[in-house]
Length: 157
Image (cartoon, rainbow, N blue to C red):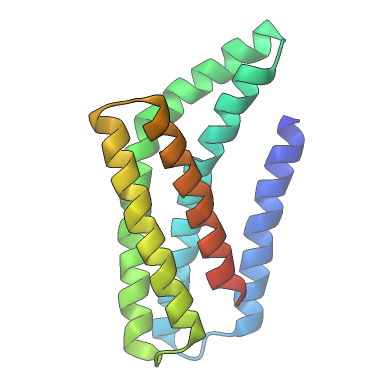
């Protein structure tokens, strides 16, 4: 199961890199903007994968796997917020650079929608950090998957 999960992540990253190269880079500003967004995507993907680590811990019956994944998740939780802040910063740089280069179109509209989803995701994470409840946890991971969908829509539109 872990191998499938890692292969899926690697395939998603390579699909995005290939799609980005196929779209071209018009000028250096676009290249830098795309590089920011690609690094941000990988950081968000690492954070999103925490859900699957916790899901595997809950579902597996193999004690050794649970222990190993619990140790991994403990390390991942320490970097969850710094990764999210770094990725958000890169997304904002990406948005600013692309706004300078592109006119308003469906791609920029989908990017604006993704940034709006990111704002809600960050707010849900702040709520969860302020007071952790089951409802806030579900809201945060639901928003993470919705935001991920917005990102994929924005990339492949």
